Structures are given as structure tokens and as C-alpha cells.
Length: 114
Length: 115
Image (tube, rainbow over all chains, first blue to last red):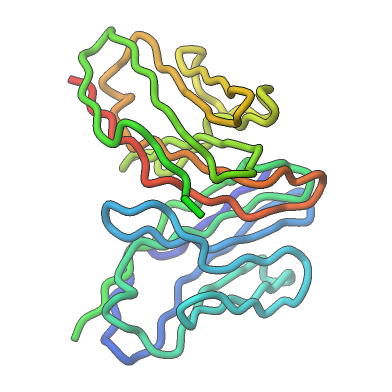
């Protein structure tokens, strides 16, 4: 069985300050992990993915995440938030050989204030 | 390259009716997956099709079904609609993994409202 837990349902930051969105995973197999972003009335967009290569993964729009097996975590960070980052973020897990069945976390709503 | 397209974008149905949603994957993508998104349950996997065969299935009742055509386009059907079926239905397409994992690309979704 596999699951992800997003530790915060809402995160609020000021523009220009760092962003940290937390995610812990559980997987019986070697996991593949993703972060997706969903802007209002838009589809899901892949930010970055970890598939057992480098543990520090760089994604689009300045986001990055670090896979920590000992902590079963895959937190998403960005050094400096921008207003356009306001959206809902989903941590997602699957495992190699599991096909395209993705298991989503419950989402973190990121608010960016001036 | 055109993205994943879903039709219709919005739909209103009455309890007890049935509905069919359509998804056209990115050209060359052979795998199509469907997800249901609701405020209460979040994003849940419905099923995945590849080469006209269902390859994976989530934990949904038999009222939810799907199919895939030879051109990789997919449809999902929900029969005997219930109020709880109101949701955003998302379709995603991907290259066939062949044991590897490829990125899934999501469509904009179909917003289904059941009254």
C-alpha cells in the first residue's frame, strides 16, 4: 500500500519569502514521488519528480524538493515566493511497476501575500 | 503539440441519469487514466486504459466504467448518477511505461454537477 500525507492544508507566506510545503510518504516499494500544482480552474501541472536518481530534484518555476528516505519525506521548497505561486499543491506517490496509478495527498493551499 | 482535451467541460445531470465523458490524449500517448476530484475525498484514481484494455482500477463502484478506442481516445461512463458523483473528472495521458515511469499530462477536467 502507498500513501502520502501533506502536513499542512493551508500555508500563507509573504511575497519574496521562502516557501516550504511538507509531505511524508508511505510505500511498500521503491517510490516515485511527484509534486503537482493546480491553479484555479486549471488542470494539474507537474512541478517536479523523483524517480530514484538524485535525491535533490529541481523543478519548474524555481521549486525544488529533497527525497529523504530516512525521514520518508519529500518536502517542496522555493527560496522566494511570487504572487503567481498562489495555488493548490499536491504531493503524489506511485511506485515503479505500478503503472500510472497515482496516489494523491490531500493538497496544500498556498497563499502569497504582498 | 495539443494537450489533453476533455469534453464537455461542464455538465449538469439529474439523479438516476447516466453520463459519458470524453478524453482525447496527447498525440502518441497510449495510456489514459481517469481521476475524480471532490472537496471531501480529494483526488482519487478511477482507472487506467492502455491499448483498449483496462490496466488498473481504483476503488469505485461498478457504476463507473470506461473504455478506450483504437486511437487511444477514452470515455468514461457513470450510470445511475448520485448526488455524490458531483465532481471534477480529470483525464491524464502518458506514454506507455514499459516498466519505466513517464510523466502524466492532465486535461482541464469535466465539471459534473448532479442535481
